[in-house]
Length: 464
Ligand code: ATP
Image 1 (cartoon, rainbow, N blue to C red):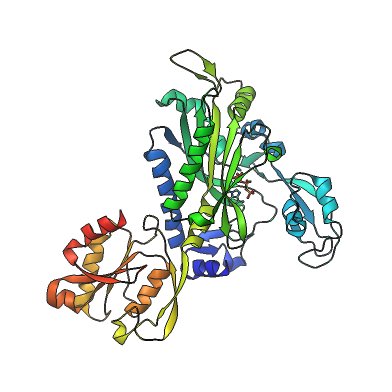
Image 2: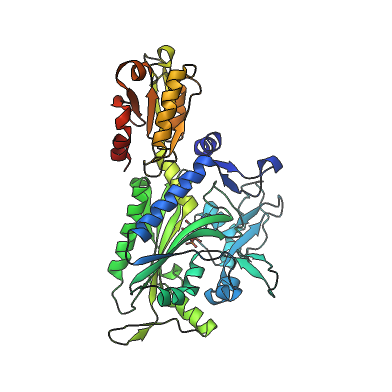
């Protein structure tokens, strides 16, 4: 994990936010490559689940929503986690996580049992044993709004906006049950402890779908299909399938309205934890909003006239956790011959001296930069000019970067570390011989010579 965190900072993927003021409560900023990577993951998700499907439409609702929404969904009173403080060193912990770490027991939700389980257990921070009782605290971020009486909340999940716009979508679009509404956006949770880099933060992004279906329809097959689609998406963005685990919640742990919930867990460097979930939420949400708003949120079957409240399956993806899993799956270290060669002209190295190459083996689909273009030498205008003209041409169709800093070996190492699938080098043969350039493949480090005029077609085939 330390290696990933340090690479992210060094190469402009993710920075601790507000470092000039000493950092701020485990918040992170996505730097230039991180922001692009995140966008590419979002775009891949939107394409797969909205654009390529006839049965799912998109939505972009507000972060500040009517507080009644959170009353109906149960968040205002029930969205709580248990906390406990060490009375000696004042360190605060999430009680269920601490109990699990120290005793191996899962006592989530049972305050007296967690308090009892911690008696005699040593604080991981100071080694003493003097705990407060475990108590519930709300994870809702409260704020105020001009012109509105009473507290307003930053949304703790994106799903809420989908349910309150269900009727508008049904009335304005030609959707037919079963169908889904998808949304990507920020969510906010006042987590007791934010930790493990971008895995658990207080501000994060979700990509959620509410998939509405007839309660009389057998749902087990649909549920299984959704699990497969979720897994398919993860493998498409380069998450290592071998590190994905399906975890079904036991009947006792299910919310009262849920018939089944399965999480995908991922083997993160710090341990196995939730990546995303799929829940059968029955008619709970539409039912609760119907009741509190007094609006009819049912569906009428046009063929039979039968009226019902649709049931819903909720595939809920955490974008930041997906990005962390992508980084972890892509991170590779390889021992290779020392780079540089003669005049940097044999850039992936020769001889027996080894160096460790760090490479992010991103799927080309989500790599922030697809092609890097270099002149072999920075001080030869004829090479620079040609490389720039290739860059200007290719950047119309692909995310490209121009680099003439240091020798070619160093440039390759840098592009490896940001996961660029291809590097193009303009050398003297390009100018003096045959107008070909070298194209170097990130993963094999093999180079081939391609006609400059054919590069666009070459990359269209490689990067599609
Ligand atoms: P956890 O048990 O880890 O707190 P959760 O079960 O409460 O997660 P959900 O309410 O199911 O999470 O939210 C859906 C998804 O949103 C999660 O699978 C996860 O990917 C993401 N997510 C939830 N909380 C956070 C957070 N604090 N930071 C980053 N991502 C989060």
